[in-house]
Amino acid sequence: MTRALSLRDNATAPAPAEAAPRSSFVPPLVAGLLVAGVLVYIQVADLDAIEARSLAFGELLVRLGEHVRLVIVSTLVVVALGVPLGILLSRPAAGPLQPPVLAVANAGQAIPSIGILVLLALLYDVGFAMAVISLVVYALLPVLRNTMVGLRHVDRSIIDAARGMGMGSRRILFTVELPLAVPVMLAGIRVALILNVGVATLATYTDAGGLGDLIERGIVFYRMPILLSGCLLTIALALLVDWLAGVAETRLRPRGL
Amino acid sequence: MPEQFHPGTGAQSDVEISLREVSKRYPASDADAVRPLSIDIARGEFLVLVGPSGCGKTTTLRMINRLVEPSGGEIWVDGKNTAHVDPDELRRHIGYVIQQVGLLPHLSIGENVGLVPKMLDWSKERIRQRVDELLDLVGLDPDTYRSRYPKQLSGGQQQRVGVARALAADPPVMLMDEPFGAIDPITRGHLQDEFLKLQARIRKTIVFVTHDIDEALRLGDRIAIFDEDARLAQLDTPLAILTSPADEFVRSFIGDGAAIRRLSLLRVGDLPAVPETSTGTGIEVDPGETVSAVLEKILAAGLDSAVVRGRGSLTVQDMLLATAARDESAVAS
Ligand SMILES: Nc1ncnc2c1ncn2[C@@H]1O[C@H](COP(=O)(O)OP(=O)(O)O)[C@@H](O)[C@H]1O
Ligand SMILES: [Mg+2]
Image (tube, chains in turn red, orange):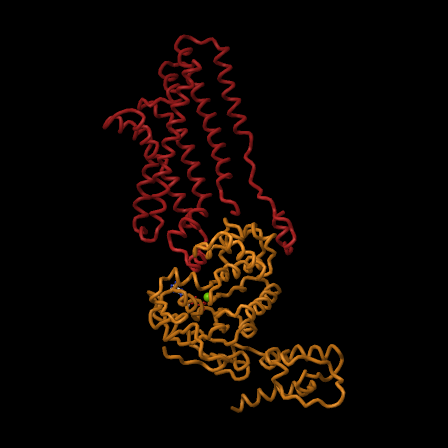
């Protein structure tokens, strides 16, 4: 429709409304059904003592809380590290540093998180901090890479025009480059977030809790209800987080892009 | 400051931009992109740089606002050697318009136009007024366009905004790099006309780059023609270039139809008219009208002469002969 308007002289045409793609309602619906299904199952199923203890409502909330906290903290750290690092590396002066830093970030994602977790546990300690470190190592790459790609793909002629009207490089970074790179950067952050939801299930191996606890206990004690609940709740959380991230992505994208 | 000036324009003393033996060689290149070039550009003059692709027009333009640093020579703008001015400060006082326009897509039209005034710390109210005034000036209704985004505008409208943005802080100098080059021919014609009218009002010193000789002839007070080797082949008024091309390159760059093109540059007031004869049978025209416009009127009216107000009458033959005579005198000289 926008296209058809722009073929004519659109001097009198009304400004086409910003058509933000509406996020599908399916993922949150599925997530809700999964949670409801699990809760109903726990109510009606014939649970033994171990299962009942692991699947008590309060217990589930605690695991979920731990999981969400791991995801939030590690994603914040990833953003706090990846975005500034990506900006620095995209400055012309930092050109030679790009390949080695990207290689390190690539390696971080290539190494399985479980390896890092166990290594950290053996060398240092267990706990929340160790879990966050291994999540950050794993999820840094998409944020770092998308920040650099987003900045690199800003239309050169826009930067040229900005320089031509007397904007300094700092002003250009903040008023031109970063806003225009926001959509690509947000996409990277969304990927990091989803990776973290999944990988945080391994935090149980460093005693940091999370929904992975249920899965692990289900395996160790050979209790299908616990294992299944852990899996389904993780899936529901992942669907919900991805959906929320999608909504945020469309909301935070600068108008006019 | 030594003031040499090239013939061709009226007021000679007031030099706004002075290129003095300016040259540019890019790193890793073994030829000058711009050969040592000296041109003085008068205040209020419209200078067009024209030539084939790669002849150094853009480089010359960008050396004036220091987006490219010269390898040699000096550039003076408004009595100051630009090498000693902070580049950002310099650029805030020189309008810059490029073919790709380069509007910031995430800012509204109003915000785009207000960018330079904002950098110069104007008050919000003053910026708002200035934005509306400029949108009006370039033919865009402020109420309709102020809060739109660039992608909602056609290419021609975007470039109007580009011009408004460059004019925002009322800079004395405008640099324009093929500003109408990406716009369809009909809109381009409109924009050229409007821009000429605008320039007649605001009298900026303009350096305008194009590869289109017709655009150059139409817009420029003077035209600098460069050849493929970045050599300045001729620097003169459009009429003088059409009448006496400096060499074979200029002749071929102008192409065919120099005499016909001259008709749209010559004004009837410049031709020798026969002092008013009998009762005026022809239509009355102003001395400032071009020969081609008057011919058009005469032929459309089915007449064979026109009366130039305050001068006398001119027949179709007079006009054609006068134009041709200039051609012969030029060839003879
Ligand atoms: N940034 C650059 N680095 C190296 N060479 C360049 C650069 N910009 C332009 N050139 C070269 O300088 C010459 C003149 O270019 P330019 O000024 O863009 O010409 P025009 O605008 O007349 O087409 C060309 O040969 C071009 O390849
Ligand atoms: Mg060019």
